[in-house]
Length: 158
Image 1: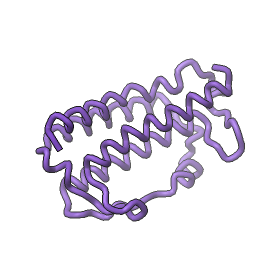
Image 2: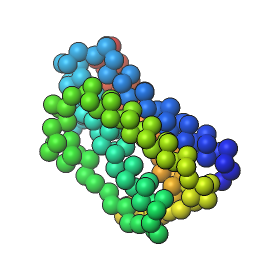
Image 3: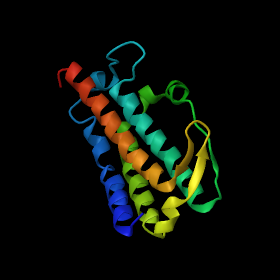
C-alpha cells in the first residue's frame, strides 16, 4: 500500500470527526429519542453507538499496530445500548470525545510507517483484518450510520 493511499485513508478517517455532530443538528430532545420502529435505535442511540464503536476501534487499531496478530473480540452492541444508558447520554460530551478521539487516532496513525498498515489482527467473527482495513472499516461505519440517521430524520420530517 502506497504512502499516498495511506495518507488519504487517514485524512478520510479524520474528516469524519466533525460529521457526528451534524447527525443531531436541529433535532429536539423528543426527536433525538424517538424510535421510528420497534427494535430500532433512536438518533441519540445511534450517535452514542458510533462513539462506543470508535473507542473500541482505537484500542483494536493500537493493538494491531503493536502486537503480533492480536485477537480482536466483538462486543454486543445492543447490550451496550441497553446497559449503558445510551438514551440518557449527553450528546455534547459524545461529540467532543468523538472529535478528540478521531483526531488523536489520525495523529498517531500518521506516525506509523506504511508497512504497519499491512499488520493484522484476528477478529473472532470476521477473521483476519489489517490495520488499513480497520481504518477503512470505520470510515465506512460512520457513512453507513449517517444514511440510517438521514432516513430517521426524513421519517421525523426534519
